[in-house]
Length: 296
Image (cartoon, rainbow, N blue to C red; front, side):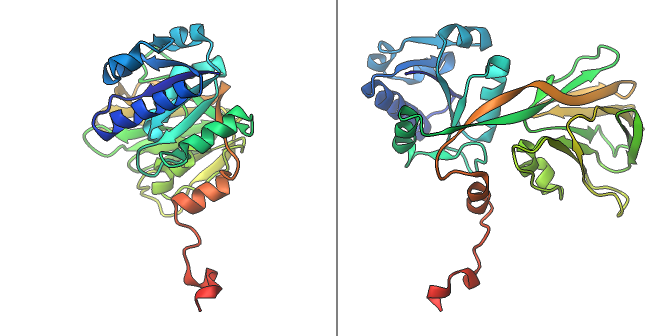
């Protein structure tokens, strides 16, 4: 089995765990390649046993791995998704962060998770992305989003965000901005602003206003075959555009087009790690004493 390993730079316990993972995989006769910034963190005796390193999508593809392991939190997983791009390489998220909706394997059950992989006892879950373009060739912070695309004020509140869906006027949002989220991103920023939780396999996206100035404006769920045209009007004539973790200040003379991306990110879902069990665990659903009749 060929495995590529990705993580953001870490130290202390994080570095020790990555070394532990690499040693475990080597003991299982796996071919291991690591992201180039991880190499200095590994002992020299481990470095000599690696099959290679990679720094970008092309170098990763040239290695022809079977899986990419992302070690960290959801932000690290999104970085890994950008690295994989449209290659179709499945990603397994190993959580060393906090909540970790995308990283369902943790330090304590990693060995068990690897056994499931060896037995091919897992499912591939496809996650849709959003694609964003500008009408005037303006630079964008990124062109694809696994979680969300959001618009924020620059210096002062945005006056309005005009949105069309498939050429039809949808709404003008007055407030502090707007989030366009994928089902994957529905449990992130959109959720904190009152948006709904979407099942990852749903072919939809959600528009969630940020601090709307109108009480009647609420999140709306649209099918992914809708193409959105977004135009911002601001007193400062500037706004901040976020595409996942990438941000850029832009002039408001641009029209943005948001649509479903032409490819998906493939994630690994292990047994007993379905979406409903994940949200029960991460959001503490069901922790009501009435659900535990044996304690009465």
